[in-house]
Image (tube, rainbow, N blue to C red; front, top):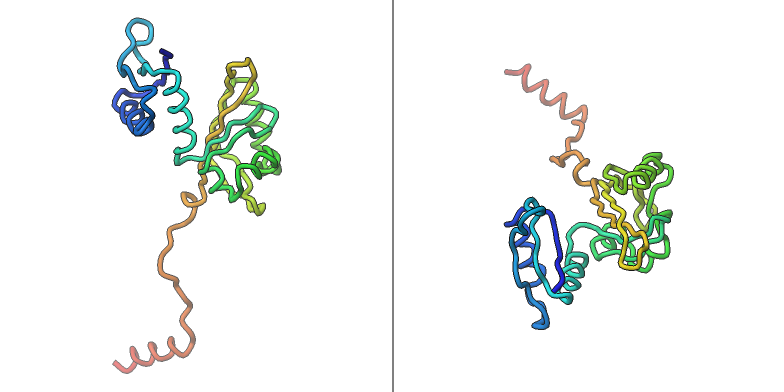
Length: 193
């Protein structure tokens, strides 16, 4: 058995595991979900077979409602989930072909400082300007972390959220300017009273 660990509250983790492996093949199953004693008391771990670890990570990537990309620190995009494709209005292949320079609004100076921060600390969280497939910029909340894959290569996971809706003023009924004739009619009605 392989051990797959996540630091999250037990209830949330159980719900996530049930949702993500629901309908998983009979070749593997969750053996145990619970606290790992001693040094790992603050983290929750699930014991899964290797096939379930793959199923779990694949499901998290493919079914995430948030846009997720696996990248290389040099800007190469290795994979983009369906949510990323939807927000960027690009296919996964188009995202991969464009790379970071094709989806990052490089006129935004926050990109350079964010990349420096991630290079020095291994992570970044902040707001950056990104580009949709047609070149339209949009504000995004971006989190990124560097990790080492099983071959010792540095990779990054990038999760972003489109802030367009959050930053848009509330929509109400359209207010139009009354014309002079309507104002004159109102004024006359008031004076006649």
